Length: 349
Ligand code: CP
Ligand code: NVA
Image (cartoon, rainbow, N blue to C red; front, side, top):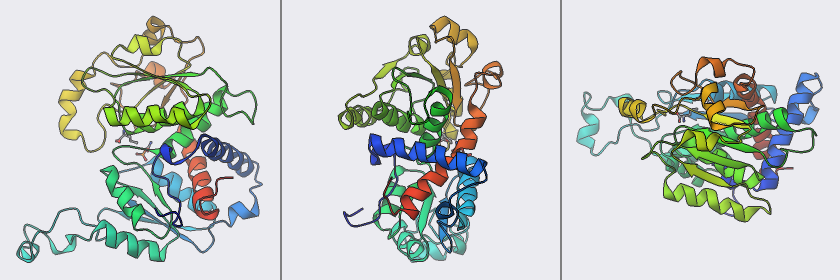
């Protein structure tokens, strides 16, 4: 985005530690007010007469439902555009001849570029919320958009999830409504180094929360991403530490929260067999927490959707599990992000 253009939410790298705290605490305030039946008129009418385009090239339960529900709650119109609803190209058209070959390329799959799509949709709506494959797809949409663009999950980042996750951590661990998280907190991520982890790690370093990551060999955080995570230390006086290991027990030691996600993210389906083998031994169980020496009151989190291989039922459905409040918090995170990025035009107050 140009200096004068709209402020977009591509990843947790786009917000300062203070802005991230405000996004989370505003989500908490919206949640309290709506549950008490007293949302402010500014909130409830924030998107009146406005349309939020939701361009999703991958499946979604939580992100879709939370965004649509948040827009409705704020008086706006959520317009869901799945990958078969708009002309945004899925398969490249190299020549007129190819385009005219109905079998190779059905006529209803014309390839309209991200540039053209962004200019057109942003001229008619107040925000684009986009779920994409490569992260460059969402940054390309943002680059040409006249309205704020919010990343609804890309191959690299999932900012709305992390606002919800920190709201969940705040509710489970903070003694004081004004304190985002208590000092000295440690997260253990056991599993794949993926989009959700990258944004969680960026946010954790910013917020002074230590994060220990255990992945199998060959599935570590890529170097460029590690650098981006470590760079966050420069944004705050009290950065959290990033710790990396190939041993789940080491990550779990003294952890307050054990977190994981699927071992096979959307788009990696053809690697399923190889991944299930590589990740064996990385399932989160109470035995692992005990062996590794997690704190006695440890909690479990997962962005969902979940499979049994990455976390046993005895943890997933236990009192330690925060997964369902975490899922609900996606609604309040979406509302908070829409309020800051769309209603308040990028001013996070
Ligand atoms: N956690 C999450 O983003 O879920 P969906 O893929 O269902 O939106
Ligand atoms: N890492 C997962 C998260 C889904 C919400 C994926 O990208 O498929």
